[in-house]
Image (cartoon, rainbow, N blue to C red; front, side, top):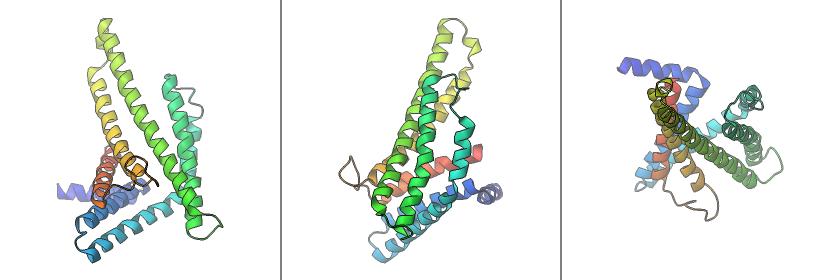
Amino acid sequence: MPGQCFSATVKLLEGYRGRDKIIRTASYVACLAGGLTESNQALSTKFLTITAELNACRMILRLFDDMSMLAYTLSYGWGKKEKDQVLRVMNLLSNLVNQAFFPIEHIAWAAQKGLISANASPWLIRSLVTWIISLCLSILRSFWNIAHARSKYFMAKKSDTEGKVNKSMVVNTYKAELVTIAQNATNLGMAIHWLPGNQLWSGKLSNTAVGVLGIVSSSIGLVKLMSS
């Protein structure tokens, strides 16, 4: 078992997506450690510095994500092959928002580093808002998929064609979408916390809470990546 775990970790680190997931997990583990050691300010600061540096690393790597996102957006196109029109609209909106996120974040990064003459704060907020919209769309899409699978199964049951609808596939859809909802909900919790002002619980979560939410969402992402 330890050998298999080591091999799986090495395989993840060899690819960009896997490495990003591990860096993200490590950053939130450090954030949790920083929250749990607040009584020791020097130690807590060290852990939070690790978190900040790992997050900065991920931001740098995202400077090169535009093309892969564009390739995905173009491959989906207008979603003409999508039979479910509600799902099609949500996917189109999601692709648009996700595509916009990267250039917005790049501008925020360039402004932070003094590479362009602009105030970084508004651009950071815009990138955060696009992420929140993307998460909300993903959650809505998951609920829609659950409702659609449920409706399809019960319609088949009423019309005595239940055998044509695989019950295990419906259950698997439920499980997969609920896990995705949990992942996006934990990310949404952190995103709202980072918003400025007094929106909901913005600025009210401790480093410990942020660390826990981040570890949960990152762990789900790792498991999904490994299973795929």
